[in-house]
Length: 179
Image (cartoon, rainbow, N blue to C red; front, side, top):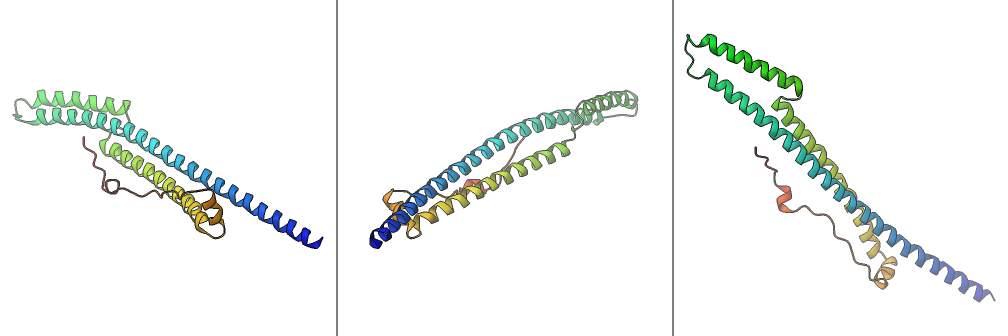
């Protein structure tokens, strides 16, 4: 009778361990999938932010480039006799610049470019954090696959190791933004 009880306890403990280990694998897989989704969200955010910031910056840079070109054209070839007329044109151009700046207070290319850089840095930091979380979950899952005795269940269930997120060579190079 004692032998039957001992065998029943061993069987229940073993069954409990099998179920717990199998469920842990499933939990780890869910965490890996969830963290992969976090990377996808971060990539979508990066695309959206970079697209919007780049378009905005290009718009403002083009506007300021046109105004600078007009100022340079007004200043070229000025004679003393034309000074009064050119001064009047410069005043009109300055008024246009001021009105534009009032309509778009952030219209100062250095600030726009700094905002673009801050946006890129924030998005890249978010993406790096998502990648670190993913790799941490993959490491935990992969470790559980090879540690004895859980590796016996992993082999029986034919579970495969997940791949770590590794930067490609082109992702490591600097990003060049041209206007």
